[in-house]
Length: 399
Ligand code: PLP
Image (cartoon, rainbow, N blue to C red; front, side, top):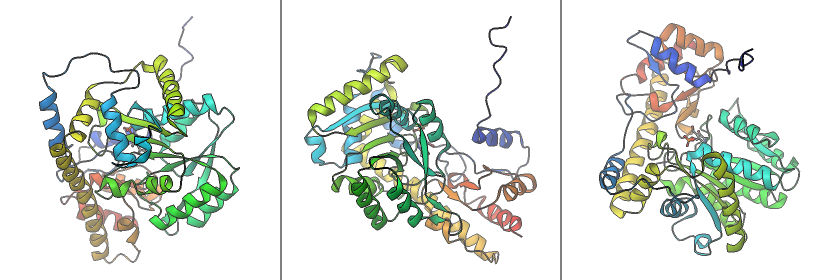
């Protein structure tokens, strides 16, 4: 008898499938706007200069010892300053329980496991749509999920009244997953004023906001500006949870560098919560990897390297914002009767184009343009070299 004969192949990840099909296509015109990773204007992966310099400083100067169970203290400190603000009183008061996590995914998963362990009857409210892995993460942590209204297909913007209704109608004291900035996959964020109203309503309902912040700095080009939603909630006196990732904003995708933080009532509670987070991590992976954490703390801990990073993250954001403008202009130039305002209104890595699965199939089959069937265009894959071709193809597929 076979031990594993009953194991069926797992469903293919839709995004990996797109990449495979792209690689297999021999067409010289092919374009990959499926990838969720930054590319330069030649379509090539990027390693930031600040990262290369940090690596140079680290090389030969580090040992390979284990990090503490909670990860690099220095990296956590710098991460908290980034998310909560350089001069945050919460940091000074030691009210934040924080551990280094396996990038944003690992931070979310650690929080979900913590939620299950200490609030076993709670749910998590997840926006529709969201990054697909959110569903997997809270499912595997066995936290029941509910969804809340977020995107408005007709306007290709925020369904603010639907969102507010769902916040009001959720049972008091519910957990909500919020994208801190650059919502994936829609690129649609609430305005500052809308965030204030959301925060106010959370206060009224005593909801707990958990922020997934995978794109700090990558959205607007300014990490402070991209932390605005979190800062508004902090000003309003919420306790929050926060998952930070350095995958996108430092280009450290494969290093798995991130941070999970939970703002507590006081220092004593923070110590207890941190010890429990470590306890959850211990039997899963024991302690987090050292190299990415060292890169992060070297960059953020050195004024000169941090300034270079800020310049480079702005460079990435600006290239994407520029490509949004170029895509919109090209579509308008073709005399497209549709409104393409949403391309430049949306922010971050993705443009939720509003294309149907059938239109996406045509883009792929007739024009060798690869993307997920939900119409999500990764703006990182758009370059000065392919933007006119892409616009033309999109225009044709709307005919
Ligand atoms: N959260 C969101 C919304 C994302 O888009 C991503 C990456 O695509 C992540 C979290 C986690 O990425 P990582 O685990 O690589 O930091």
